[in-house]
Length: 414
Image (cartoon, rainbow, N blue to C red; front, top):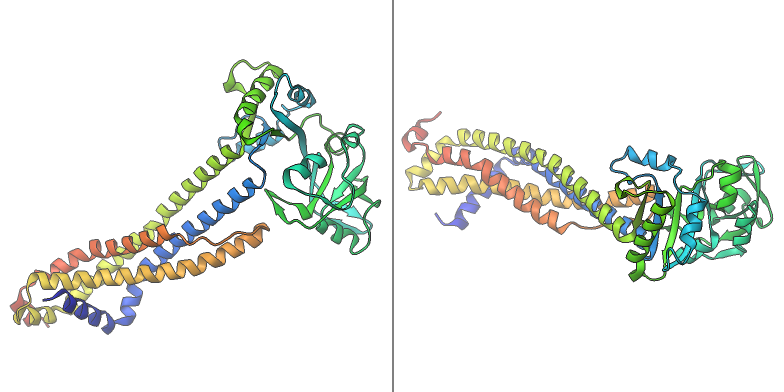
């Protein structure tokens, strides 16, 4: 029998039992849809995060206290570490120690909201350098002037607020010169920022920026920093600058064994490698978990094919009686199984693409960032190939059973 005719016979048989065929491929559809969603959202998240990192600039170096986290539980220890102090900033600021350092500023995070009058807003309170932030992220004030290094040295109670903070606290009225309250301490608003949205890992519109010295002394009551941001003169000098920072901090902390460092350094290149690796591992793990549904779908197809072989015993006998060979019967049932799973794979790809598009929009809105949709072509190709393979593997045994039936016995079957 010609292969074209075999396809027609297989399609006609599948159309005869449309409901059963649809239920049969349900496991395959769910499996391929899940793989598409996992791969698409994973790729979209990776692209978004790398884009946020790229917004920092390739010459940025982040120094964090504590040992480098190996797992989620280690991050708490890092936040509570007090290993970065003003002595370290002074040592790193010396050109003799770090000759290619263009700028450096410590940073602290202040939990809690900000209030004015009867209005309260839960924004992001940062103790940092306004001038360095402006250089790093190309942020300029919409009204007023940024606080200066003199304000940082004098521990001035001044603040720069984002556009959303201004709208929530002051509405359409002017905010410059007004006093906002953070942890029962007044801060005079010296500047408001133009709407900027998400930049790197924070939303500029929701930010309250304070001199780090003020936040450290009056709001947190600590003598250490949560993070230190450094900037190399050029991207090409980042590696040399990192090496000089490590040497300087080890000398400052009297560390002779690098394995006992109480700080760690993150560069854009290092962050890209870490994030790509983490997302890749998570995607692979989730894909393996999702693949179990394909196995379940394959077993379901095998069961239905066995039922189909039993129901069509007389048909098999009749076809053999008029000249069909074992190869013809085997081909027909195999093609039926592959068509079933292949069609299920195609539906899964379309459904997965639609749901992935919706998921990307939803996740982006939830995170307050633009998360573009990425169609995973590799996952689509793999989905079709895997679904066809599942049909071939799980359809082979029922097809052999059909092909090996005796024609006379099959015709006698009631």
